[in-house]
Image: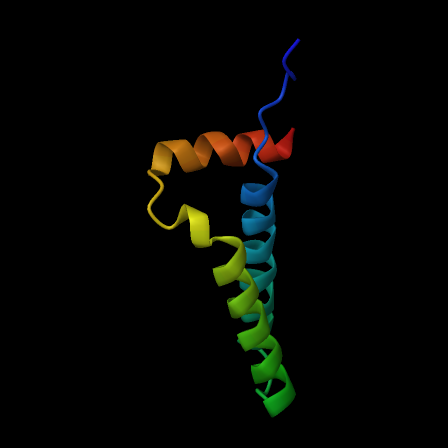
Length: 72
């Protein structure tokens, strides 16, 4: 019997990396940017790029479907 969920774990990692980057970037808007903070921002960007590499050309409707599956 097949699994009930076809959740794409890698896509969920991509979403999490993007959310972490967005949260940090928002926080940075209200703080002084130091070398350490700039380095952390670059690390988050690199992590997102790595986690999301397979999804760069995915259509929006497919992304929304997979995003909904990550919430389950």
